[in-house]
Image 1: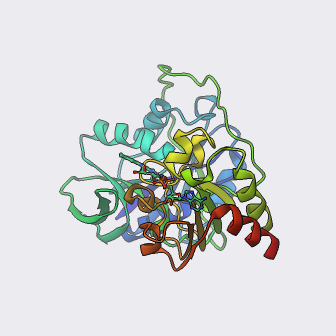
Image 2 (image 1 turned 90 degrees about the vertical axis):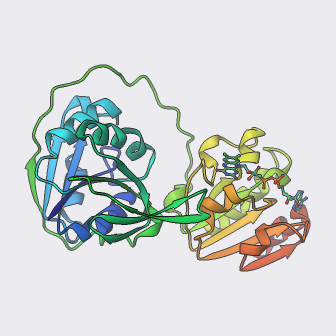
Length: 308
Ligand code: FAD
């Protein structure tokens, strides 16, 4: 049996979420990777070094400079034949194009898996992570997105896969890239950060996030937020952690002025150590916290920063 894993990248660097997808794919036997990009030679080289990878297929063309769902679908389908599983990380990109692949193959996508029970049976969270569904698929090809926080990352070094040209696909041309507006930050990316400090509605304003930023700078942490903080305009929406935001599982997650709604917990409850600072001792966040501090955040956070 064999699996084809879509490599997530920015034409320069391979994204960590790919490594977890490779681990999940290993249940299918041989693992090949598909790198679709433009000027993506460095990514192909990095992909070839991932431990346990058999072969790297590279589609290098202008059409793949940006991850347009229509173009990615075409190139994945052109290379899909013979594989028992087509796998992508459950990231914005994977969630965007893989359902098209599944529909084109006339199979049901199996989304956001957290465990491979066998090559036709998988576990995945439902109801914002409050229940785990065991899903069995009778489809000939399994089309799967993988929750990155649920699998160990495959070693990024140690492999020596061959690198080959992928089969080409005609340009679909029904969509085009206009622009991307990304928030610039020197801090680590939320989904790969080892430490995250997040603020909620309790922060009161965007300006008040400055006290969180100071702690983040000292800890080398990423800054996250609850949806309430994002909806109130305190911070951009790519800060959002939770069911409809990013799923994270850092070594340390510090929740400041966040009540702990299930939709927020769905995005961070797998963090190794959870610290909560909240003035309400009844706040549900304390039920999942390893360390809880009942205090006013405007006193506790500056004191934490001063102590670091
Ligand atoms: P609140 O619930 O208002 O909590 C604020 C907390 O701050 C309180 O506990 C309060 O005691 C504390 N506080 C206030 N002042 C201070 C102070 N001075 N010092 C210390 N503590 C203080 N939410 C997410 O976060 N992520 C999601 O992805 C998400 N997806 C959703 C999807 C759906 C379909 C729905 C319906 C909701 C979703 N939500 C999500 C929203 C979620 O239900 C909550 O509304 C939200 O998480 C609440 O954010 P909060 O904890 O910041 O605000």
